[in-house]
Image 1 (cartoon, rainbow, N blue to C red):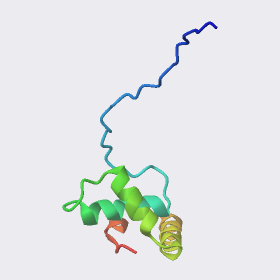
Image 2: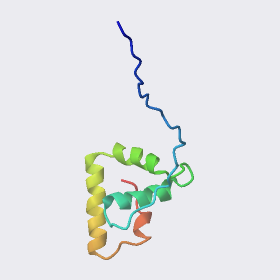
Image 3: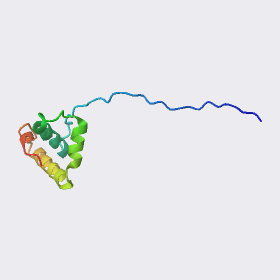
Image 4: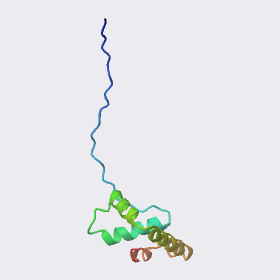
Length: 92
């Protein structure tokens, strides 16, 4: 009886520190970006403003709240009123 040894590949894990990425609104004028602008303004003193923090916040909004942001953003674009004043509005 012969025994043979086989090499087995063992996956290794690379431990890298997660990069903290600040949330920045994109150029698209939509409800999500309107929400980003207002979230950053309102919570700038209580949060680091990271993408992860915003994702948690945005996913906690109800469907109705997201639709309200989309509707408001569309109205701002239609009236050509997408500007810094619009970002001072209330959180929905």
